[in-house]
Image (tube, rainbow, N blue to C red; front, side, top):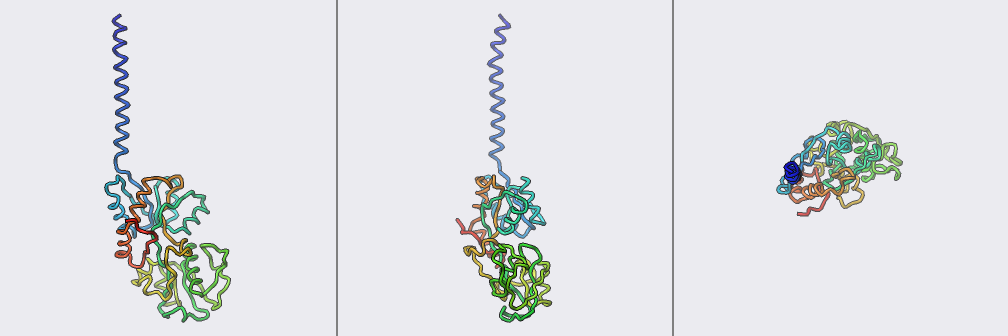
Length: 284
């Protein structure tokens, strides 16, 4: 009888201990989940660090913190996103993103737009594209996406005509009309501004224009049509992208919301004058 009594006593005790154990586990998970969520964002270089510093300030009180992971190459950043080493990437425009998806079968989705960067025509020799003569040399970047955009700018300026079938990233082979028989040279985009004395004009990214102590808009001899509402510019809008399986993630949407603010646009104007143009309507 004593043995049975002991068993009856142990059973409720075991149940209580199991309940306490489960409660402890659940409490531990809740505590962990209630902590700060770190979102790893892949970027190229460190240029945009001031922007993301403000994003983290905008996220204060929401239990979310952005941690930047810098890459020297955007291809590596996209690879890391695909491999789930990152939560999102913020360095590329639509044209580059779509090319990456096409070539590598990535399943990415855009969850927010950031900025447009000007890509205009510069010269040390002439003041207007009207001064360009037959056989003149024009420098453009030697990488696929920026070369394609530069050729599009030359077409906008009325200097060449491209095959309509070329898409967002045309190549020199896609030029179907070149009345002035211009010699288009593909060169390192970082060196184009320094090579202007050797050519009639050149086109390169606005960050390299800034390095050369020139204004990406004011010092250009030709300025491309520049508005994010212009459909022709959509391929060149920089974006925040995630794996498609995460496109509805509420935490990531809060990060985008923290980015698309008026104080971010203010940073564009104060720290990146004429280098970045917002490609979003600020919510607050």
